[in-house]
Amino acid sequence: MPDAGPAHHAHGGQRASAREHGLRSVPALLSSGVSEFLDMGKYLVLGALASAAFKVFLPWQFVQALAGSEFLSLAVLMLLAVLLCVCSEADAFVAASFVYVPPSAQLGFMALGAMVDLKLIGMYVSVFPRKTAWLLTVVPTVCVFALSKLLSGIIEAGG
Amino acid sequence: MKRLVLTLDGAFVLGLGLYMLILSQAESYAAFMNPRFRPLTAGAAVGLCLAAAAFILRPEGAIDLRRTMCFAILGVLALHAGSGSMKGTPGLALKPPPEARIEPDPHVVRDGVPYLKSNPARLFLTVQAGQAASSDQRYITRGIVKRSPQLDRVGMFALLRGNMVCCLADAIAMGMMIASTGGAPPQDGAWVLVLGYVQPLAEPSPITDLGGTSEAPFSMVYDRARLVAESVEPIDRPGFPYVFELPASGRQPLRLTGGDDDY
Image (cartoon, rainbow over all chains, first blue to last red):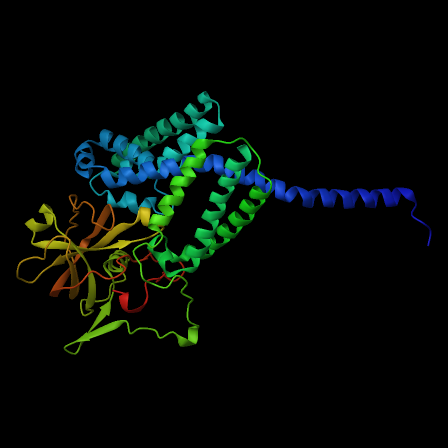
């Protein structure tokens, strides 16, 4: 069998070196991941503490009173979605429990909560430039409000 | 100093991973999360432990005392909440093999009449899905009494149970309106056992002043039917007050609340 020559051996040596380099970089990858986790975890902990406090101490009669008008109820429930940080697994059940608000407010609660909440606002501010973080917070809020009102109008017109 | 703080950060993450791993194997997991997330928690815990070990061996990045403080607070809260509401149960409770488990009878017989066990949250979902059997079907259920001015006006009270769809933070008290046959309604916040049958309402009757309970900040009752009570009996608060009910889907509805506490 003819000898493959020095080029083949060099190529095989490069592959082994790349594999070793890849394996050596796994601990570095994990370590870097934990560093990121620690940085983001700060906002997770603070956001969770704040939302737990709101859930326990928020006067719900106040919320019910403000929910008298359709405009206010949508705004109040969107604010609640930001403050309570309800996960997307359970937000439909929580929204359904607000029986004293119109469906547009329940929709606004579910739609905004997935995109903007206390934890996410902190993360946006820490990762992105201030202007970008501001846009990431304000644009979804305005869009959800406008689309919820629009949908409510369409449903009322059709019904 | 930098190395010390980073090592401390790594230790906090390792502690968090170990706590999650132990909790995922313990009975008291159900005090915090829906049990269907056990494998996910265990998998995440293992990953976190491995990553934390790598970080402790070769820490990197800048120190941030605020984040160290946040994780210290998290650690204190985890230690404080560690026992959950299932204090006293074994730390590691392994499931018995399938052949050793005895499936409980889904009925309770009173005076020769069988009553189907159904906690208030499951009854809510069953009736909402239109799966409630005919008026011949009797139910036995137990939960927390919740009264409100709207319910008092129509001579009813709500019977609720904290339903953990995802985790304790998002638990919702769900249940039915109960029409009692006579006598004074039970006290708000009391635990009662109710035997009765489901009666549809001619018009939906949404209750808007229910508020929350001690187990959950949000409450909801099914507003198109009520449970007509044949008997209302005071009971003690069960050791574990929450249930884990989900709406029926294309697959079988998940029934995670099993055993003697299945109503």
